[in-house]
Image 1 (tube, rainbow, N blue to C red):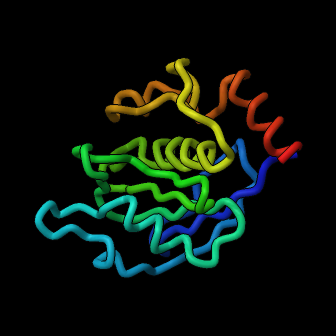
Image 2: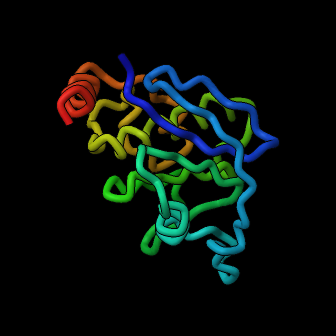
Length: 158
């Protein structure tokens, strides 16, 4: 039995394989200008999460076709706010031949946070913090055994 997740994706992107979750895919056309910091040319992650969280009752990840940041960081691949049950993943820095795999990893990573997981010290675990694209490429799309046990404990005993 897998934990449930809803993912909103732009209509021009196909769904990707997210093996760790039971995913319901939805398409969404979002006005990204609501989150855009024009001086940086990037979408502000916390503003996007807060705006998109309205009415969310189940863990939900929004895939945003822009470059994201959070104050104090040059960029982010994604951001989750577990209290709001909402996360965002930004596509701009994931582009390239490994795009689908990178997107799956980042969606899974942020969904892990929505279910209460923190960053993992295992560089192969999907919950490992990606400071660079190389970090994302090196890690797996799967949780390590330790993180999977934590996820199952939280999902089966909320």
